[in-house]
Image 1 (spheres, rainbow, N blue to C red):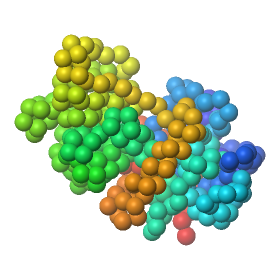
Image 2 (image 1 turned 45 degrees about the vertical axis):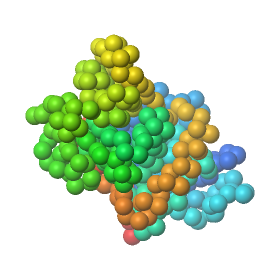
Image 3 (image 1 turned 135 degrees about the horizontal axis):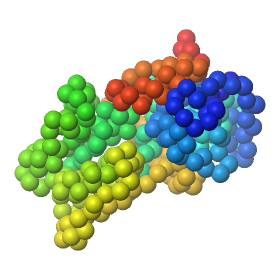
Length: 329
């Protein structure tokens, strides 16, 4: 099969087309003929040598796919050979064939293209796990997502709004802010020209927000703590602004704040399977009804994975970047 491999840690052009043996599924796994694969920040980190591959996972990049089940351990499964699914995978998505654990496969939502379906798993698993399971965003609470125009951001905005929350988002330009508001953000904040703490405080009558989803870290942390309501929760999913921060511990004590975070890839299969079940129950109906929609900024042929990574690193996109492995009919 054709695949994209990381020849050595480095810039986007280290991603090169290669030939690899077609993988063989094991117990509880299926082989998927990949039609499309999503691009995510962890892929970039893996390419630069900053995200070690978990033991037993493919060294090929790619954490989410959509395609056709070809074969595998389908006994007692709700799926059959020939069925179209999207899946969260441990790696290997940038290829014509990929192994997926059966509990992490989800049906392609009705009416959705394979490109759209491939953009779903990584961000929806991440947002649900961190915003609703870990941070426990409750009915009537307010929510802020940093990086609202990213793949995570557009997912978080739409999901939180669909579930009835007041949503704030930050982005790096007025154009991106308007895109966030078009997706449902009640107020998008240009972090280059506005102070998100002041804006959020003013919009919430000084209370602050109940939950913040952060992929920045660094010097954002004390400002985010100032932005939280009493009993608020700050959850980290990436540290693009740095892994060290000055934390005002007195505020945590006095206002009962929670700082937490997680990464998804190394978690056990049972943990991810539980998220998949919740997505199927709570989120897939919203996708099939069109209440939440995939936001695809641009797609690239598999052989142009390097260009796709360069676009992601430019941060000029709004939404998801996807590799098209099998051209759409």
